[in-house]
Picture (spheres, rainbow, N blue to C red):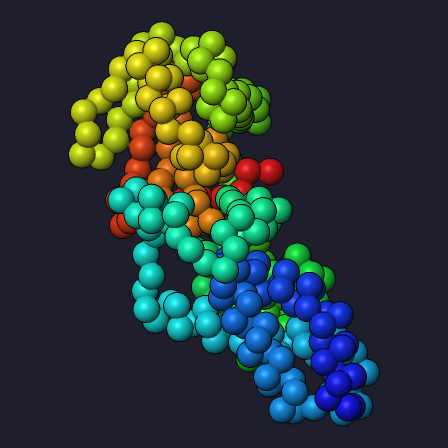
Length: 284
Protein backbone atom coordinates (compact mmCIF):
# COMPACT_ATOMS: atom_id res chain seq x y z
CA UNK A 1 0.00 0.00 0.00
CA UNK A 2 1.34 3.43 -0.92
CA UNK A 3 2.48 5.39 2.16
CA UNK A 4 0.26 8.35 1.33
CA UNK A 5 -2.76 6.07 1.06
CA UNK A 6 -1.79 4.39 4.32
CA UNK A 7 -1.46 7.80 6.00
CA UNK A 8 -4.92 8.81 4.81
CA UNK A 9 -6.48 5.59 6.02
CA UNK A 10 -4.58 5.83 9.30
CA UNK A 11 -5.98 9.32 9.87
CA UNK A 12 -9.46 7.93 9.27
CA UNK A 13 -8.82 5.39 12.06
CA UNK A 14 -7.13 7.85 14.41
CA UNK A 15 -10.24 8.64 16.47
CA UNK A 16 -10.94 4.96 17.09
CA UNK A 17 -7.31 4.22 17.96
CA UNK A 18 -7.17 7.16 20.34
CA UNK A 19 -10.33 6.00 22.09
CA UNK A 20 -8.86 2.52 22.52
CA UNK A 21 -5.50 3.82 23.76
CA UNK A 22 -7.09 6.28 26.18
CA UNK A 23 -9.17 3.58 27.82
CA UNK A 24 -6.15 1.34 28.10
CA UNK A 25 -3.81 4.01 29.46
CA UNK A 26 -6.09 6.54 31.14
CA UNK A 27 -3.92 9.45 29.97
CA UNK A 28 -4.41 11.62 26.92
CA UNK A 29 -0.68 12.33 26.63
CA UNK A 30 0.21 8.65 26.80
CA UNK A 31 -2.59 7.73 24.40
CA UNK A 32 -1.28 10.22 21.84
CA UNK A 33 2.24 8.86 22.30
CA UNK A 34 0.91 5.34 21.69
CA UNK A 35 -0.88 6.44 18.51
CA UNK A 36 2.27 8.12 17.22
CA UNK A 37 4.22 4.90 17.84
CA UNK A 38 1.45 2.93 16.14
CA UNK A 39 1.87 5.05 13.02
CA UNK A 40 5.64 4.61 13.06
CA UNK A 41 5.37 0.83 13.30
CA UNK A 42 2.60 0.64 10.71
CA UNK A 43 4.48 2.80 8.23
CA UNK A 44 7.65 0.74 8.65
CA UNK A 45 5.76 -2.54 8.22
CA UNK A 46 3.57 -1.38 5.36
CA UNK A 47 -0.02 -2.53 5.20
CA UNK A 48 0.60 -4.80 2.22
CA UNK A 49 -2.49 -6.88 1.57
CA UNK A 50 -4.03 -6.31 5.01
CA UNK A 51 -7.76 -6.87 4.57
CA UNK A 52 -8.87 -5.32 7.85
CA UNK A 53 -6.77 -2.21 8.36
CA UNK A 54 -8.60 -0.93 11.49
CA UNK A 55 -8.21 -4.33 13.13
CA UNK A 56 -4.52 -4.50 12.19
CA UNK A 57 -3.87 -1.03 13.56
CA UNK A 58 -5.82 -1.83 16.73
CA UNK A 59 -3.61 -4.87 17.25
CA UNK A 60 -0.47 -2.75 16.90
CA UNK A 61 -1.84 -0.11 19.28
CA UNK A 62 -2.86 -2.82 21.74
CA UNK A 63 0.66 -4.24 21.88
CA UNK A 64 2.14 -0.80 22.36
CA UNK A 65 -0.31 0.02 25.17
CA UNK A 66 0.40 -3.32 26.85
CA UNK A 67 4.13 -2.54 26.83
CA UNK A 68 3.43 0.90 28.30
CA UNK A 69 1.22 -0.57 31.02
CA UNK A 70 3.88 -3.12 31.92
CA UNK A 71 6.52 -0.39 32.10
CA UNK A 72 4.22 1.64 34.35
CA UNK A 73 3.70 -1.38 36.61
CA UNK A 74 7.48 -1.89 36.88
CA UNK A 75 7.80 1.72 38.00
CA UNK A 76 5.19 0.89 40.64
CA UNK A 77 3.30 4.13 40.26
CA UNK A 78 1.09 4.82 43.28
CA UNK A 79 -2.15 6.84 43.56
CA UNK A 80 -1.58 10.53 43.88
CA UNK A 81 -2.93 11.06 47.39
CA UNK A 82 -4.52 14.30 48.50
CA UNK A 83 -1.16 16.07 48.69
CA UNK A 84 -0.83 15.63 44.94
CA UNK A 85 -4.38 16.71 44.14
CA UNK A 86 -3.57 20.35 43.40
CA UNK A 87 -0.70 19.36 41.13
CA UNK A 88 -2.95 16.99 39.21
CA UNK A 89 -5.65 19.60 38.86
CA UNK A 90 -3.19 22.18 37.56
CA UNK A 91 -1.00 19.79 35.53
CA UNK A 92 -0.24 20.84 31.99
CA UNK A 93 -0.61 18.12 29.42
CA UNK A 94 -1.46 18.75 25.82
CA UNK A 95 -5.08 19.64 26.47
CA UNK A 96 -6.30 19.31 30.08
CA UNK A 97 -9.83 20.40 29.14
CA UNK A 98 -10.05 17.77 26.43
CA UNK A 99 -8.75 15.15 28.85
CA UNK A 100 -11.41 16.14 31.37
CA UNK A 101 -14.10 15.68 28.72
CA UNK A 102 -12.64 12.32 27.76
CA UNK A 103 -12.49 11.23 31.39
CA UNK A 104 -16.14 12.10 31.86
CA UNK A 105 -17.10 10.25 28.67
CA UNK A 106 -15.38 7.09 29.92
CA UNK A 107 -16.28 7.63 33.56
CA UNK A 108 -13.78 8.65 36.23
CA UNK A 109 -14.70 5.62 38.33
CA UNK A 110 -14.11 3.35 35.34
CA UNK A 111 -10.65 4.85 34.77
CA UNK A 112 -9.74 4.43 38.44
CA UNK A 113 -10.87 0.80 38.52
CA UNK A 114 -9.19 -0.02 35.20
CA UNK A 115 -5.95 1.34 36.64
CA UNK A 116 -6.08 -1.40 39.29
CA UNK A 117 -6.09 -4.23 36.77
CA UNK A 118 -3.02 -6.15 35.69
CA UNK A 119 -1.82 -4.97 32.25
CA UNK A 120 -3.00 -8.07 30.37
CA UNK A 121 -6.36 -7.98 32.18
CA UNK A 122 -6.88 -4.36 31.27
CA UNK A 123 -6.04 -4.90 27.61
CA UNK A 124 -8.28 -7.97 27.37
CA UNK A 125 -11.21 -6.23 29.10
CA UNK A 126 -10.96 -2.97 27.18
CA UNK A 127 -10.61 -4.57 23.78
CA UNK A 128 -13.31 -7.19 24.27
CA UNK A 129 -15.89 -5.56 26.54
CA UNK A 130 -15.59 -1.98 25.33
CA UNK A 131 -14.64 -2.48 21.67
CA UNK A 132 -15.91 -5.99 20.88
CA UNK A 133 -12.56 -7.29 19.62
CA UNK A 134 -12.69 -11.12 19.40
CA UNK A 135 -10.67 -13.08 21.96
CA UNK A 136 -8.77 -14.82 19.16
CA UNK A 137 -7.32 -11.45 18.10
CA UNK A 138 -6.66 -10.25 21.65
CA UNK A 139 -4.81 -13.50 22.42
CA UNK A 140 -2.05 -12.54 20.01
CA UNK A 141 -1.61 -9.18 21.73
CA UNK A 142 -1.39 -10.51 25.30
CA UNK A 143 0.48 -13.65 24.21
CA UNK A 144 -2.03 -16.07 25.74
CA UNK A 145 -4.38 -18.69 24.35
CA UNK A 146 -7.90 -17.47 23.47
CA UNK A 147 -9.29 -19.43 26.42
CA UNK A 148 -6.83 -17.85 28.87
CA UNK A 149 -7.53 -14.44 27.34
CA UNK A 150 -11.23 -14.98 27.96
CA UNK A 151 -10.45 -15.73 31.62
CA UNK A 152 -8.37 -12.54 31.87
CA UNK A 153 -11.32 -10.48 30.64
CA UNK A 154 -13.70 -12.31 32.98
CA UNK A 155 -11.53 -11.61 36.03
CA UNK A 156 -11.23 -7.98 35.01
CA UNK A 157 -15.00 -7.73 34.51
CA UNK A 158 -15.65 -9.06 38.02
CA UNK A 159 -13.30 -6.49 39.51
CA UNK A 160 -14.76 -3.62 37.47
CA UNK A 161 -18.34 -4.51 38.39
CA UNK A 162 -17.68 -5.43 42.02
CA UNK A 163 -20.24 -6.90 44.38
CA UNK A 164 -22.49 -4.82 46.68
CA UNK A 165 -22.32 -5.77 50.35
CA UNK A 166 -25.77 -4.35 51.17
CA UNK A 167 -29.28 -5.18 49.93
CA UNK A 168 -30.44 -3.50 46.72
CA UNK A 169 -32.94 -1.28 48.57
CA UNK A 170 -30.20 0.03 50.91
CA UNK A 171 -27.86 0.56 47.98
CA UNK A 172 -30.54 2.62 46.22
CA UNK A 173 -31.05 4.81 49.31
CA UNK A 174 -27.30 5.31 49.68
CA UNK A 175 -27.00 6.22 46.02
CA UNK A 176 -29.83 8.76 46.22
CA UNK A 177 -28.36 10.48 49.28
CA UNK A 178 -24.78 10.60 48.01
CA UNK A 179 -25.90 11.75 44.54
CA UNK A 180 -27.87 14.57 46.15
CA UNK A 181 -24.81 15.56 48.19
CA UNK A 182 -22.58 15.70 45.09
CA UNK A 183 -25.15 17.60 43.06
CA UNK A 184 -25.55 20.21 45.81
CA UNK A 185 -21.76 20.45 46.20
CA UNK A 186 -21.30 21.19 42.51
CA UNK A 187 -24.14 23.70 42.33
CA UNK A 188 -23.14 25.47 45.55
CA UNK A 189 -26.57 24.90 47.12
CA UNK A 190 -26.17 25.24 50.88
CA UNK A 191 -29.82 24.47 51.62
CA UNK A 192 -29.70 21.26 49.59
CA UNK A 193 -26.53 20.18 51.39
CA UNK A 194 -28.10 20.79 54.78
CA UNK A 195 -31.17 18.83 53.69
CA UNK A 196 -29.15 15.70 52.89
CA UNK A 197 -26.78 15.89 55.88
CA UNK A 198 -27.83 14.71 59.32
CA UNK A 199 -27.56 17.60 61.84
CA UNK A 200 -24.76 15.86 63.78
CA UNK A 201 -22.95 14.47 60.72
CA UNK A 202 -19.19 14.00 61.03
CA UNK A 203 -16.18 13.96 58.71
CA UNK A 204 -13.01 12.11 59.68
CA UNK A 205 -9.79 12.39 57.72
CA UNK A 206 -6.29 11.06 58.25
CA UNK A 207 -4.11 13.44 60.20
CA UNK A 208 -6.91 15.94 60.81
CA UNK A 209 -9.31 16.73 63.62
CA UNK A 210 -12.83 15.42 63.26
CA UNK A 211 -15.32 17.89 61.83
CA UNK A 212 -18.83 17.63 63.24
CA UNK A 213 -22.09 19.33 62.34
CA UNK A 214 -23.97 19.62 59.06
CA UNK A 215 -23.47 23.35 58.63
CA UNK A 216 -19.72 23.19 59.18
CA UNK A 217 -19.32 20.25 56.78
CA UNK A 218 -21.48 21.99 54.19
CA UNK A 219 -19.51 25.22 54.47
CA UNK A 220 -16.16 23.50 54.06
CA UNK A 221 -17.52 21.46 51.15
CA UNK A 222 -18.65 24.59 49.30
CA UNK A 223 -15.23 26.15 49.88
CA UNK A 224 -13.69 23.41 47.73
CA UNK A 225 -15.58 23.52 44.39
CA UNK A 226 -12.68 22.00 42.41
CA UNK A 227 -12.73 18.82 44.43
CA UNK A 228 -16.48 18.58 44.06
CA UNK A 229 -16.08 18.68 40.27
CA UNK A 230 -13.59 15.81 40.44
CA UNK A 231 -15.77 13.65 42.71
CA UNK A 232 -17.83 10.73 41.41
CA UNK A 233 -19.92 7.92 42.82
CA UNK A 234 -18.29 4.51 43.10
CA UNK A 235 -18.77 1.23 44.90
CA UNK A 236 -16.40 1.47 47.86
CA UNK A 237 -15.91 -1.78 49.75
CA UNK A 238 -19.37 -2.88 48.60
CA UNK A 239 -21.26 0.31 49.53
CA UNK A 240 -21.92 3.62 47.80
CA UNK A 241 -19.06 6.05 48.30
CA UNK A 242 -17.17 8.80 46.52
CA UNK A 243 -13.86 8.87 44.70
CA UNK A 244 -11.95 12.08 44.00
CA UNK A 245 -10.04 11.49 40.78
CA UNK A 246 -8.83 14.51 38.80
CA UNK A 247 -8.05 13.43 35.23
CA UNK A 248 -8.77 9.84 36.25
CA UNK A 249 -6.01 9.71 38.89
CA UNK A 250 -7.22 8.58 42.28
CA UNK A 251 -6.48 11.13 45.01
CA UNK A 252 -9.01 10.33 47.73
CA UNK A 253 -11.91 8.08 48.65
CA UNK A 254 -14.84 9.01 50.88
CA UNK A 255 -16.63 6.20 52.67
CA UNK A 256 -20.13 7.44 53.39
CA UNK A 257 -22.54 6.42 56.12
CA UNK A 258 -26.25 6.87 55.40
CA UNK A 259 -29.15 6.43 57.82
CA UNK A 260 -32.80 7.21 57.12
CA UNK A 261 -31.98 8.81 53.75
CA UNK A 262 -29.49 11.29 55.23
CA UNK A 263 -25.71 11.23 55.38
CA UNK A 264 -24.44 10.76 58.91
CA UNK A 265 -20.72 10.66 58.26
CA UNK A 266 -17.73 10.64 55.93
CA UNK A 267 -14.42 8.86 56.36
CA UNK A 268 -11.83 10.38 54.02
CA UNK A 269 -8.96 8.12 52.92
CA UNK A 270 -5.95 9.65 51.19
CA UNK A 271 -3.03 7.44 52.18
CA UNK A 272 -1.78 5.77 48.97
CA UNK A 273 -1.19 2.40 50.61
CA UNK A 274 -4.72 2.34 52.00
CA UNK A 275 -6.17 3.49 48.69
CA UNK A 276 -4.38 0.63 46.94
CA UNK A 277 -5.95 -1.93 49.26
CA UNK A 278 -9.45 -0.50 49.23
CA UNK A 279 -11.92 -2.50 47.09
CA UNK A 280 -13.35 -0.15 44.44
CA UNK A 281 -15.77 -0.86 41.61
CA UNK A 282 -17.93 0.96 39.09
CA UNK A 283 -21.41 1.68 40.45
CA UNK A 284 -23.94 0.33 37.91
